[in-house]
Image (tube, rainbow, N blue to C red; front, side, top):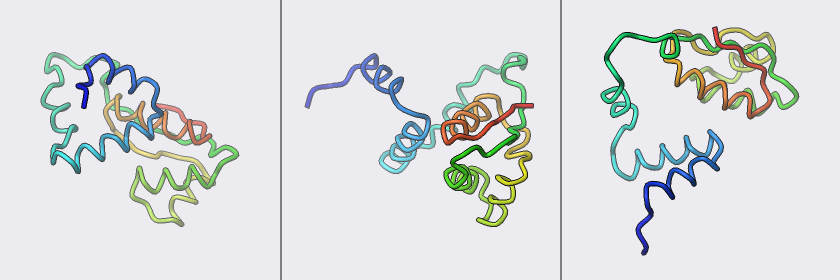
Amino acid sequence: MAKITKEDFISALKEMTILEVKELVDAMKEEFGVNPDAVAVAAAPQSGASEESAAKTVVLKNAGGNKIAVIKLLKEITGLGLVEAKALADNGGNVKENVPADEANQIKAQLEEAGAEIELA
């Protein structure tokens, strides 16, 4: 089997959706027993927090036309039950509070891909 270069791997990642990347990360966790979140936290720069890395709140403004997909994602992201996730999709509100900007942007991208209207506060 030919060795894949770092550049080829990154190029392939750029073509994936956020959900596909999440599934890849989960598969890597299972295969190698490594939690990339811990590595990312350890590798994060420790010098002063910038506006970009400040804690964010992910706010659902509108579930959009594909509400079922949004409800499924809300259940996955928040750990809420079906009834609570549906209520959040119907009424809007905070999906997650005080999360790092990178995680907030990832959640926003996942929900927007499913058709939701999201705001970061």
